[in-house]
Length: 115
Length: 114
Image (cartoon, rainbow over all chains, first blue to last red; front, side, top):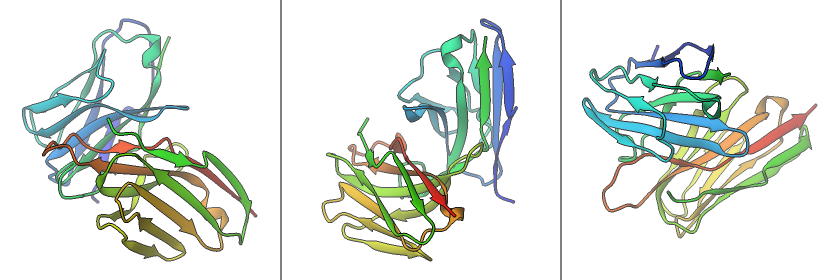
């Protein structure tokens, strides 16, 4: 089944403790992206990657890092999480991202709480 | 980042009624997409419209892309409780060849009451 898999689904952590949210897709998509979704603010892009070793900042990149060493994986790293990073996070992939009008396939989300 | 305004933000209607939700922008988009999101899940693509004036139908859902490629609408006929969810529009704006991904509207929360 074609899908984007995120782990974990739920995570509660403390301020300053480094964490990684994993994302993997099995569709051989070139483009991957991370979003956060907050009430009243909608979906906002954190980082995106157009291909292996090619990443770029989205609208809200502060406090986050990403890497794209393999085509299928795009982990999101929070080096020193803070309470304002409490949110619902989504990973998405697409055949060609913003080009070619291809749709995004989203993961099921990771609900992160930083206390 | 180009802004997509969705209206209404919230809509609660009775089963069997018709409804329209709107997605507007001052920017021109090369395409617009509509997604539906259920609580606790990621958005799921419903349709992509790419040509100004284009109309696409998906069972009881009708999607339209404005002639000027700045707006879109989603019309649901004879709404059913299973249509309940958050409807998101998302667009890819013309940006001189950039591919920085989709811009999302904040969504319309739709509740269909039995």
